[in-house]
Image 1 (cartoon, rainbow, N blue to C red):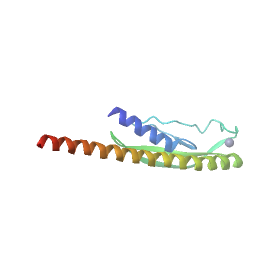
Image 2 (image 1 turned 120 degrees about the vertical axis):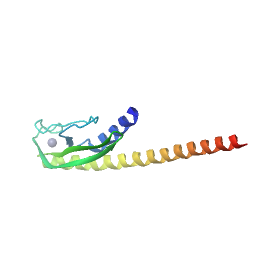
Image 3 (image 1 turned 60 degrees about the vertical axis):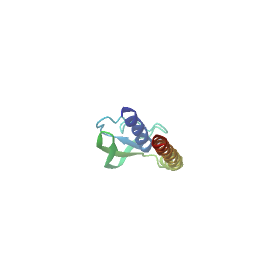
Image 4 (image 1 turned 120 degrees about the horizontal axis):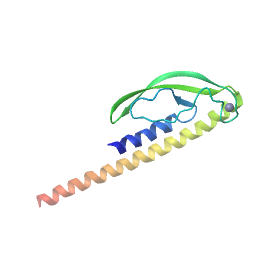
Length: 124
Ligand SMILES: [Zn+2]
C-alpha cells in the first residue's frame, strides 16, 4: 500500500515540477517545492505568482486537496524559453504515461489469464 502511494507521488510530482510549486503540503504527499522569494534559478530574475488554485489528488489514502500556485519568471525571454521546454517535457511525460498504461494492461491481462488457467486446471 505504501509502495503504491510512492508511485502516485512520483507521478504527481512529474505533473507539478516546473513552474508550479506547492504552497501547502497535505497528507502523505511530498512534492518538490519552489519558493517565490528565491530568484529564478535559470536567470536570477525575480519570480511572481501568475495564478493560484486548488487541486484534488486521488491517493490510496483518499482525496488530498493541494493548494497550488504557478510561479513564473519576470524575465519574459527566460519564461518563454521555459514554457517551450516545458511543453516538450509534457509530451515526454504523456508518452511515458501511455507506455505505463499499456504495460499495466498487459500485466492485468496476464494475471487474469493465469487465474482463469488455474481455475480450469482445478476443474480438471
Ligand atoms: Zn528567469
